[in-house]
Image (cartoon, rainbow, N blue to C red; front, side, top):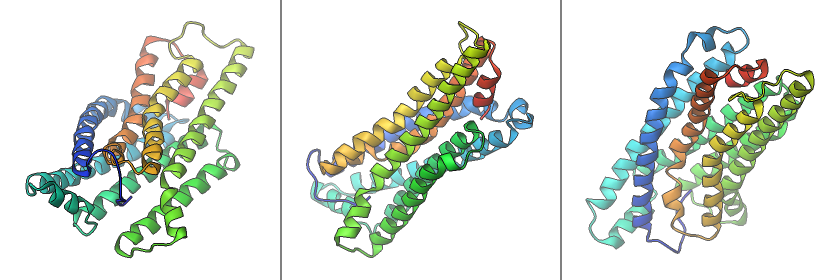
Length: 288
């Protein structure tokens, strides 16, 4: 995730915009984290026989992702301050932002990677839980995640050991597409399972018409929650291959967006739960 010769918005303006957007999303993320924490730590979730394990996994990952997002915002703030208030010449600002040897740059890259790994691992685990512990079904998403980790580590190594060959460029260009493919596939698998479960429940006559937490309503919540991160990735892919500087305004907010996706899902399902009775399948999914 280094810098290339780009077009569009000036780099220092794009990076400044990215910091502002990340700060705004992090504020929303903090509010969601505070609102969701009682839900994540409720005795019903953590002590329920069917959902205790997944609830603990979700709680630990949620805390880790919030810590990573906080650290990333702090480093981003340092970078914004040093590039904006210590450098008044636009050319010097851009030169500073392009310098990969600034102490905060590797940390920012590493934190983005870690947040992506945490989010991908959590959505794979959720998919694993929803599909009744079916490992074979998740073989492709797991391979994509392992591929993403490998590519990220290689690109991080390239920051201090630049290599300009076709393989290196190909690997660097695959970062966003790999993340998009993995996220899209696992989300689709979760939605597919919910739809199939809805059909089975409908045939069995246990679907409660008018329920605010029927399975189709859960599908809508999943799609809307996942759309934030997925849309950002799609925009990043387009901007990256256009070599547009605006990618540096979209990239930093991805860190809080990943955490927002999961917390928003938990908060919305819990809010709907209080307004209606649910089927057993609803409870299994919502308890994750």
